[in-house]
Amino acid sequence: MLLLRHCRSLTRVGLLKTQRVQLLQGAALPVAVCAGSLCARWGSSHGGHKSGQYQGSHGPNWRHALAGLLAGTGAVLAYGLHHSQTEQAATTIVQPIAPASSLPIYTQDEVTKHRSVEEGVWVTYKGSVYDITEFVSMHPGGDKILLAAGGALEPFWALYAVHSQDHVLEILSEYKVGELSEEDRRKQQSVKSTDPYSTDPERHPALRINSLKPFNAEPPPEILSDNYITPSAIFFKRNHLPVPQVDPKSYQLQVEGVPGGVSLSLSLEELKTRFPKHTVTATLQCAGNRRSEMNKVKQVKGLNWGIAAISNATWSGARLKDVLLAAGYRSEVAQQTSHVQFEGLDSDVTGTTYGASIPLNKAVSEEGDVLLAYQMNGEDLPADHGYPVRVVVPGTVGARNVKWLGRIIVSEEESSSHWQQYDYKGFSPATDWDTVDFKSAPAIQELPIQSAITQPVEGAVVERSAEEVTVKGYAWSGGGREVVRVDVSLDGGRTWQVAQLQSSEKGQVPAPSPPPGRAWAWKLWELTAPLPPAVQELEIVCKAVDNSYNMQPDSVAPIWNLRGVLSNAWHRVKVTVKEDEEKQKLL
Image (cartoon, one colour):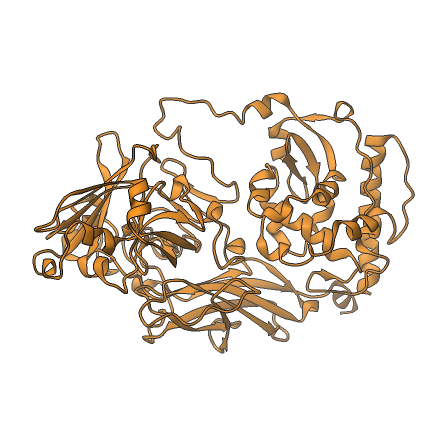
């Protein structure tokens, strides 16, 4: 029955495709059930279909290539591109493309209207327009393919170098329906203005924007857990002010305040050459991650972050400890000072810069791993992530990881910055804006145990015929505490199963357990379980446990606070179980 249903769908696809090709080429093509150019790409036999994976002899090659091309997700690309281009060419039928002059011209506004299966799914690439609607239902990565809908393909392509292959472009070419207007091509040249944000860098269109000025955005949850190391382009963005333009040649990092020491002024080159380079894999999380769940209990003030204001990267640079030693730090300094302050080069119209501080013992600890980072994921820091230098304080809230670092001060006092003194602090649910005293609470440093479900997303549909459901997510704990277990429930928390933890990229040798107190990176997790019988809805829940046996609270209300920070209750996602259509007819 599945095969018959599949073939019927191909008949519809073939007709749609033939009508478009006839329009573009003025030639008729034969169409038959389970035949034609699409079937040639799948192979001579489609076989069964389970969990979105077709079993054609060559199907994975082109489907996974184009899926990754359109969605920019590593999970889709991880399979299917290992055959040679020669073998690919032997099973590939590429239809000739009409000259650009014979194709319709579309504006970007017209393309943007095609962002759903109902309205059609269109994308652009290098000035051409492609209609990939018929591919959506066959996409093994699910709705991720719709991330590029109505927009440019280039940002998704750039996430993964595997797209730079001729046969991928050949496959895409079959879906071409027109050209983008010359005016919209020119609009790619951004116009400078007096807007302080006019020089901000371009961002990946997959990011879900919480505010434009300053720019704050998170990736869609369903692609967050595709990679153990988050690609820089979709690493969550948390800016408080305009992104500064810093000339690396004239950059100077000021280091001062060490009792009995000296003031240092370090160029970028000196920072790179005078001090050994260290690399640390560390997760950064915004204090407001999952704030949206607190808003459902009672309105709070702050950006309405979902579950993806958290990401994981490798950071490389000089150790803060080494730089402080060069400035004259000695062990007895700890008796005179308690804090290390950081000032960024980002500023508002009054010249006020972003600032924060951390305890001195964290800054100078051999096990603290605090970096003055100039690289992220093996490349220069992107502008949004602090180019040319930022502080990376593993295990500590993102707000203390100051970007565009300009000044380091060893001091008896915490930073006087607004963001240290009057923000990023937690309070009782009973505290409101009329009674809050920010001086009464300590600044957040280490964050509590955290986990969330990235797949499936809220409102997703699970087919009963799949017989099982796969749940994925992330887990992390502050202060270097290692996540040792993630529990997952499919029935709202009545019964539990233990998920499998992942501490490296799939296919790589698992990383050894970190030294105690230095588990800076998250763990991705996954559970595949049978669908419970006779249920129409699943309430999927996750909760994590770290090696200090800290656990997440079961609900949001007891931890609600007026700033919506430290939101780490059990994460809950409701999905619908859809019965097989043939079974429903029999009933």
